[in-house]
Amino acid sequence: MTVTNKYYWLWCCVALFFLSLPLTAQRTEEFVSQGDTAILKGVVVDTPVVEKKHSPHKASFYAAILPGMGQAYNKKYWKIPILYAGIGGVAYGIHFNTKYYNKYKAAYRDFVIRDPGNKSYLEFIPPNLSEEQIYGEYEQWFEEALNSKKQYYRRYRDLSYIGMIGLYVLQIVDASVDAHFNNFDISDDLSMQVQPSMMPPVPGDFAGVGLQLKFKF
Image (cartoon, rainbow, N blue to C red; front, side, top):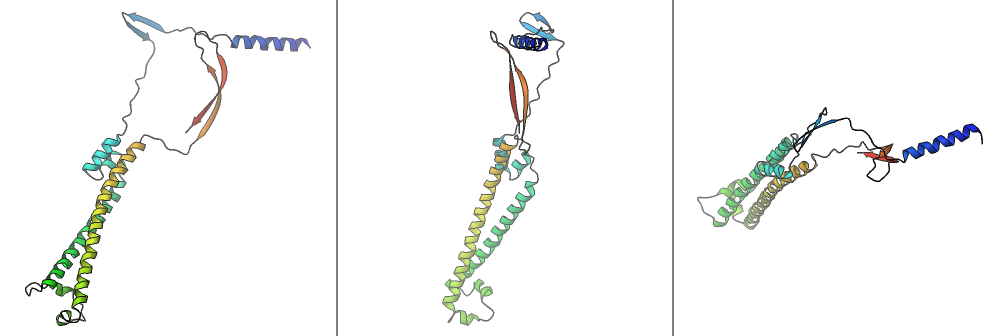
């Protein structure tokens, strides 16, 4: 073994020895004691900014009071026109089906009772048939047709009301879910970082050198 190699291995052993010793540092900050209060001079401490988080309960409450208010609370303003377009469509369905349900209901009642002063069913007689034919050979057919139309519009009126209730509940759920995920940063950026790190010693322990893995989402 050459002299150079001897010194090389000697320095390696010395370096490993010092790495295994506890690491300490001298604090240079100046502390001023005032009774039970310790003041650190020369150090500026940043006051942490507490970000106000969205509350799912508030979002649900606002949405329950007024449809779209929960979406406004979550700052999802683009959803409000879509929501009210849906509400308008369902409201029109309720109005349309209710209107014709009432018409056919009155026509069916007047035709069955046969009150000469109330003949609302006349507007539903087909153009190729006369009132005499309706009271004759086509009587049963016309009565069943009026009743069928009445049931048809009642069914879709009820479905429209159910749709309105469902839309109301759905926008409350949407506001609550949006508030839950409002504080999450969902991103496709996933990376891994490998770097050496020094593990701080504890009393009676020794410092060590390790490898640290960091995942960034």
